[in-house]
Image (cartoon, rainbow, N blue to C red; front, side, top):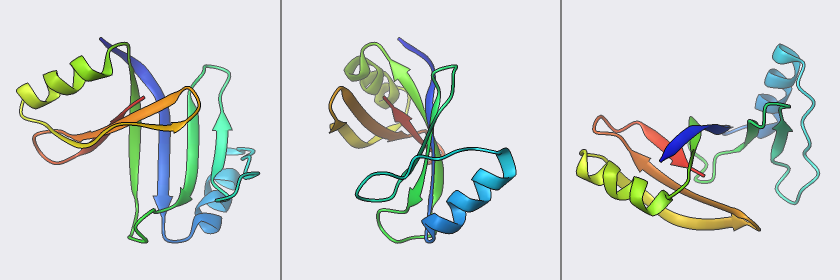
Length: 112
């Protein structure tokens, strides 16, 4: 079962500008020490945030990711309820697998 929000992502055309905005607006220290310069923040609560460049160069979006104990079953349930899998389960880092789906109105949500 999906249990709680684990990650929030903000991406757009100008990663540096977005990172500066959120850092200054909320007092966030972002770790950008990675090849893509993707800004990461880890909260004590376990929720992480990522701020970076939109992969397709588009205007960007905000996506929240929900932890699912059984992501495959959750994706099947999503489809049964009228949602659509946009990206199947994909390993993006060691011990980190994500998927993306849209709800019946087209809002994109992630599973982690």
